[in-house]
Length: 256
Image (cartoon, rainbow, N blue to C red; front, top):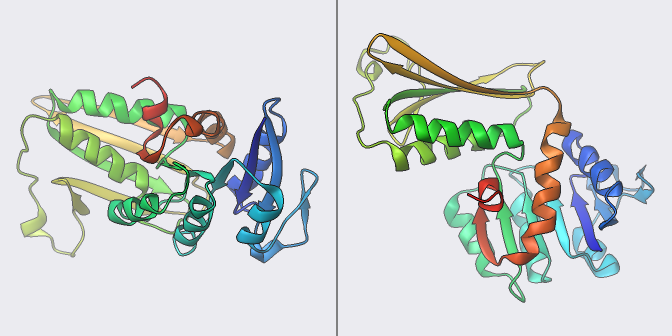
């Protein structure tokens, strides 16, 4: 049995994680933490206020974190110092910060971070990286709910990184020098324009738009419901114990 503790347990994704873990025959939900909702009960677990105390009392194997960029580093540090593997879906931390956190792991604990846990989103990024080999003119449009804490999204940044590693040329991305309103051409990451949209009613969506002579190619993924993240989360919970150090991207666990 894999003993699991969840932080951000009262959030929209956190609740889905509690439900998903509770139904798996090879997992046991041993604790859940959410300081703003301490004392409330979900899936038969009373939410705790303090992560360190919850870890000490429940002896988990894996922490699943879907919280906020302002608190996730402290959660990771606490868990890794106790030798607890981490499965993290919270974005907004730099690679340098993640590397520093992983260096503090006890007993070979793994810090696994995925910008997106939806299998379709991983395939979207993989297909975009392949397309970029042949169509280097590309821009990314990502759309999320209006309460998302970071922009661009972690998925967009990861997509840009994967594209940068595969395209053989970097064409000029015109328009920045003629912007009438600053930022109209989006943010430039890896010489790729990323446009972030934040609106109520959205969940998580991304379109990678390629242009070529006389043609365009659009690769899009839409998250309709947050349950789409759960197969990827459960896969990571099962696989994280086989790794150590910092591991980034669900594709690393999908037979890349």
